[in-house]
Image (cartoon, rainbow, N blue to C red; front, side):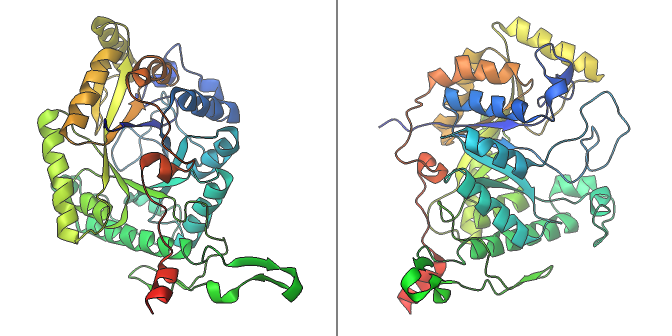
Length: 396
């Protein structure tokens, strides 16, 4: 049986190239309008995209890593990703919606209830992209913590003490969020008018979490949502993030630039799973690719060069920047799925043009038959997780 390739699309502003808003296909006047995001989601859904991720951060976009810049010729400002997903939810019916929600300064209780609410609003299509924030200027928005400027060399080496602290905290956040998601058993709501009981109090459970940065009592104020637990995802580039994904996520996005890296990164992810003692289903692994698509390689190269000139320098990315034809992109995806990847997350360099190219020319090359069921977990082949408290009671 041929394995179904998972295709995700990442939405960010006018596109992943910093000069994308100046492309003739862009809709810069609509970036903060509901119709813009709904149109993108519907285009992706009609094409058979499995899930959308929506970018977010606690500071303005910047061309400088980890700090602010003073550029005014690029998109600055964004809408809240979780709220965008909630806006999109009732206007779509099949596509998964995975907003980015930061763990560092956001209360875990609010993360849990917000994502549960999205799961209800989408009828079981919610996910969560976990993200940390180590930037000093972002911490100043909240005033509760102070971070020194990021040591970029230590971050690149993977031995940053702050990086370890942030990802340890993220692991705790995911743990307590999952506890809150399970805080109501599936049959906690009984609606028994005869006994005047709407809720069975014995089926609500405390999270009772104590961590280095916070403690949460619980239970959640939101009943267990359609998926039981929305799908948890993370973007990872090196050992510490790989271990967070292996410990806490269902799906991980990684950033190979060639076949050799693709193979070695997949090995690192599996090694991380072994180190942390992951049990059950292995991580689903998707490779990220920034895509700029045209009918010929020369047209794609010329389009990228025009955007780079408007940006003032060649665009850079953590992920591979692919400027070429849809056919060549399909070959690239096939090569990486042959290595063992479950699929890809495509980052359109220009929204809406590259999303339309993906929809018209790339998606038809893959089996887009819907998986059984209606939830995001079912679409990607994940089981609905048992409630931990029900399992504990059964065991007791």
